[in-house]
Image 1: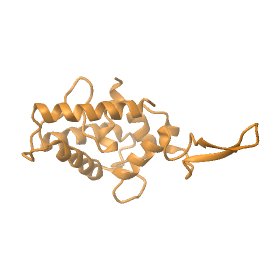
Image 2: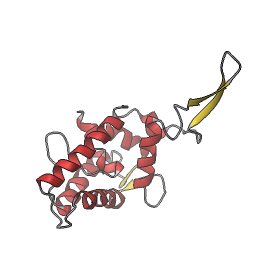
Image 3: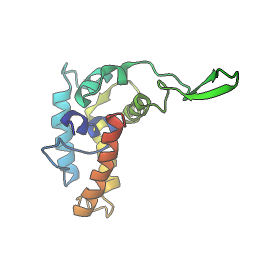
Length: 161
């Protein structure tokens, strides 16, 4: 796994740490880890993560988060036999970039197009709380294993799979 893409949680609402580290065991640990990574990803030091900075931090091509997305998930074409065909729109909302874009927009709570530390921390806490099935504020081994399984699914999405 690439370290940059495993940090997607900080921008895409899934709590995770770099490959060399582990999931934080507490909400407070997660908040601190997010703040530290956020500071490193905020290249222009304006206190906001824009789409280009998020793409860089995630190890993605900037176009994945910056390019204008088509609204339609499918396109209509006419085959060589003259019959209409419904095709997957590779620039639509169901595409690789569309899914990542939707996660970014979900994390952007106020809809201003950039991510604040508070928004990223809120998204991280939301995912942490979902993983903390017993609600004790601490991820036990079973909860951490389940969260890591979810992170692997996110990793596949970020890798384009």
